[in-house]
Length: 114
Image (cartoon, rainbow, N blue to C red; front, side, top):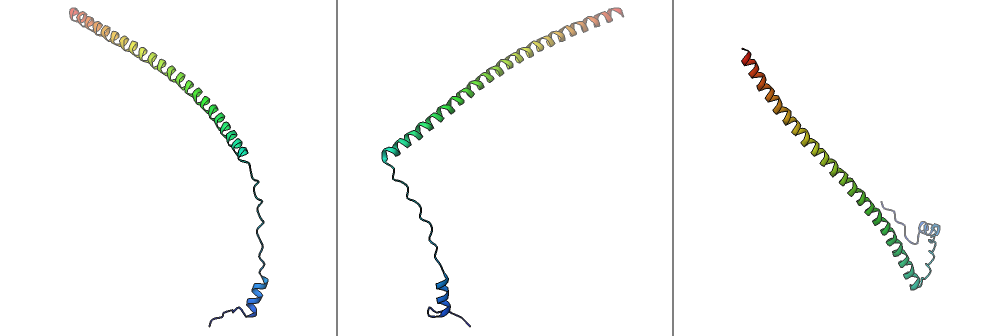
């Protein structure tokens, strides 16, 4: 069984009479801005962006300078380390040669004592 409400029925009239349409508030129209004023605002924004970019670029250059100083210090430190290792290697080689010489002398002394 289906129930339908026709446009002539009292239920349809009651439904249409109880509905109230609430209009949205109208938005205020933006004020018309002269093209010269818009251009001035755009140029001011561009100048502000350029100023921010100059500051960022200066900070970047400063950071690059600090990085260059750090890497130069690291390079110098590695060169000193390499020099110290070379000196240590030379000293160990010298001591090794001297130890072999002393060993040979000790072997000769032991053989001559027999």
